[in-house]
Length: 313
Image 1 (spheres, one colour):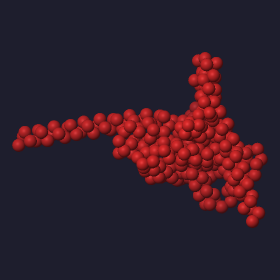
Image 2 (spheres, helix red, strand yellow; image 1 turned 30 degrees about the vertical axis):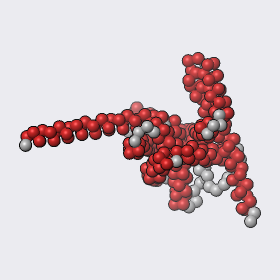
Image 3 (cartoon, one colour; image 1 turned 60 degrees about the vertical axis):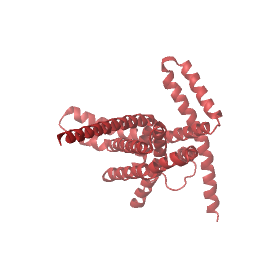
Image 4 (cartoon, one colour; image 1 turned 90 degrees about the vertical axis):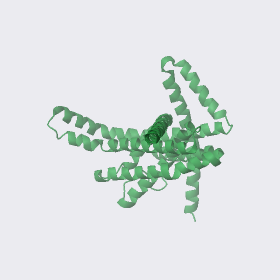
């Protein structure tokens, strides 16, 4: 009997060690996959605060929470099963679908850019004052979740590419870990950003001179930060969208645009010495944004033409 018990305990210890090793592997793979998607995560964090402007302070965090829940739904309920199904049964469809998402980002970024230069608006934009508060909130949340869907799809696709050598179950676990972790980081950061003015106002009521000074700095910085984030968000849509299109074309065998971008990057890197990595990256991002502006403007022109044609009937 003791021998049987010892054998059973040995078996349990082996299983436990194997499970711990598996968890370590999942954590390491999730960290690697998440780091590869860091650029898109930054874009996501830059885009989202613009959707939380024009709300009263008591609605800011609830709106962010609604968007975060929508983001988790996007990642775990829609994109995770879709990614695994496509990976298993139709991997060739992943690139074209991502390119369609990239084109949508180009359109949204170009539309905002064109509106800044006086182009006619289609529907309510992020800068419009709300009339029906409930409808306004619902529209903002829906718009943020639609944009998040594209960025989340890119995040999940990048993560999937990093774990394509794993089994299907392990891929699913890693993608779920990446999706949850990135959502918490992005929307936690967004929550801090949009409540920065409230934090600053609270600090100005403290007795400490340092706290008061910090609070005043936060209050002065908040309007500038929101404008900066809105600008970065628009640029991020164009950059990420253009980058998705350029990379997708390269995957599909159309190498011309990618070759131009890579050649420009290498030229700038070689010419700028120690800062070559930074300036090379900026060059690639700028050229991708140019692609995004061109494609987005073409799509926006088509959408405007359709809207005008429908308005005549």
